[in-house]
Image (tube, rainbow, N blue to C red; front, side, top):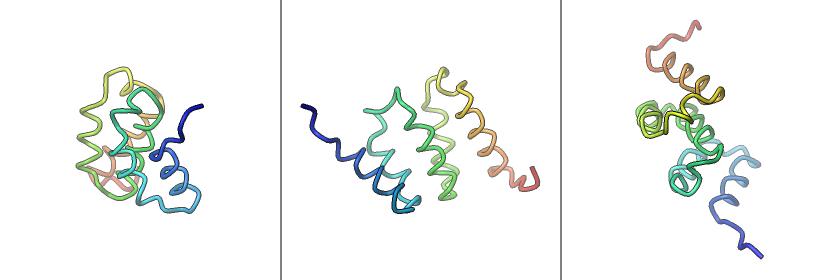
Length: 90
């Protein structure tokens, strides 16, 4: 029987209680373990939500090209670019 992962539990609790400002930090702590999952999408979204655009940008640079080319991550990167350039009309 697998032990419950404390990072996954913390992530689920943060989402369920609307503490979205905590998501990026939880994902940062768990980044290496979840590198092949959807966690980078949530991590990117968390950084953008918290206006930590520099952290989001460096996360993008750390991602493997295959993850960068995923549909969801590509859309998040477009959002990051608009926020970075202060293009709030788009």
